[in-house]
Amino acid sequence: MIFELFSEGRILLWIQANLRNDFLNAVFIPFTHLGDIGIIWFGLGIFFLLFKNTRKGAFFALISFGLSALICDGFLKLIVNRLRPFDAIPELMELVERPKGTSFPSGHTTTAFGFSVAFLLNTKKRWTGWLVLAIAVLMGFSRLYVGVHYPSDVVSGLVVGSAVACIVTFVGNKILVRSH
Image (cartoon, rainbow, N blue to C red; front, side, top):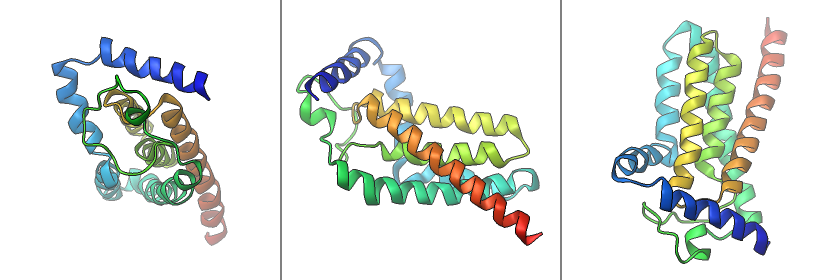
C-alpha cells in the first residue's frame, strides 16, 4: 500500500510540477466541474436524444450513467473508503474545492465512461461516439490534473463505467430484440 501511494503520489506531483500552468488551469478547472452531478452527461444525453441517429445511444448512455453513479457512489466508495490524495500527500495542492467523500473510484470518471462507452456502442454516428469518448478521457485526466484523485481511482472508474456500459448494452439490446 505504501509503495502504491508513493508511486501514484509521484505521478500526481509530476503533473503538478510539469504540466500545470495558467492556460491549462483555465481549461481543466472549469472542465472538471462539468462532471459535477453529471452536468455534461445529462446535457449531451438530452441533446443526442433529439436526433434519430443518436437516440438509442443517448438512451443507453443515460441509463449507464445512472447505474455507474449508483455503483460508484452508493457502493464502491463506501466499501473502499480511500483517502483523497490531498489528504495523504502534503505537497499536493488541489486546484478545486476539496470534494466531499472518498477517492476510490473516481465518480467523474466512472460516469464519464459509463455514458461515453454506452453511447459509442449504440450510436449510428461512430465519429460522434469517439468524440464523446475523448471527452471522457479528458474528464478522467482532469481529476488527476486538479489533484483530487489517484491514477488508480481514474483507471478503476474507466473499468467500472465501461463494464456497466457493456452490460447495459448487452441487456438493452436483448430486450429490444425480444420486443420486435
